[in-house]
Length: 239
Image (cartoon, rainbow, N blue to C red; front, side, top):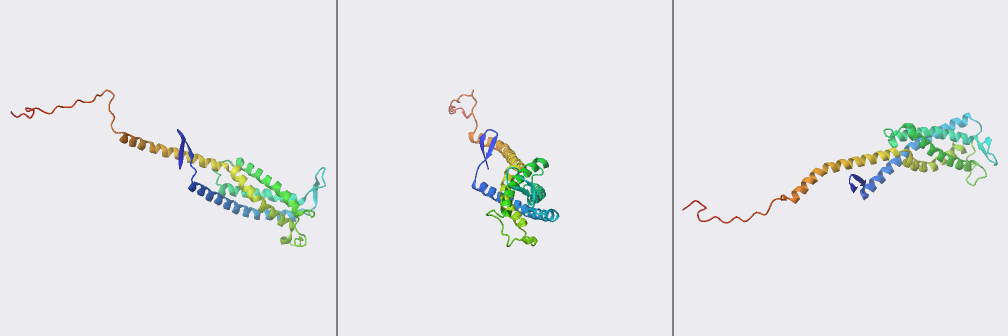
């Protein structure tokens, strides 16, 4: 439903039905995003397992951070590589299925903001992962249970899974509002176009209704007709 704001311009009228439909649509998008994210979790963890087995010990230092006692460790590198692979996987599925934006925007124009959002989430995730892996952290995962003896008892894998679960809601909101905004813009344009077509179809009928309601109009030059006198005795032609 639309309302007129000025001649030729329309804006949507907020209704309970419209809000409910929007809520259902957002819920559907979030569920799809979650399913894509679930598949991305599998891709992420599978990549992490591969690089962890092929690479150095995850807690070995790669390079020290200047002016600090901290270091970038191999689990930071492994986590970032797994993120890049899963990020590309998630983007393609979200582009073609969740937000269906492939027809409305170019691949790279959407991928770089998706990558930027993911990089923001990865940065937050690396801080959280460090807190989960560092033994002196209050959030450190217990080493008595997660002693790295098997894959299911590897702290890095559980830490990565926790990071994914924490970062996913933030990624959904930012991607919906920014990355795949072309879908929202396209829908608003379609809504305005449909409103204009509906108004154009209604105007001829409205003009006819107005004409019928107003009735015949008198000519400006016409004057009131004078009363006609009744016919005389000889008007009928009889003597």
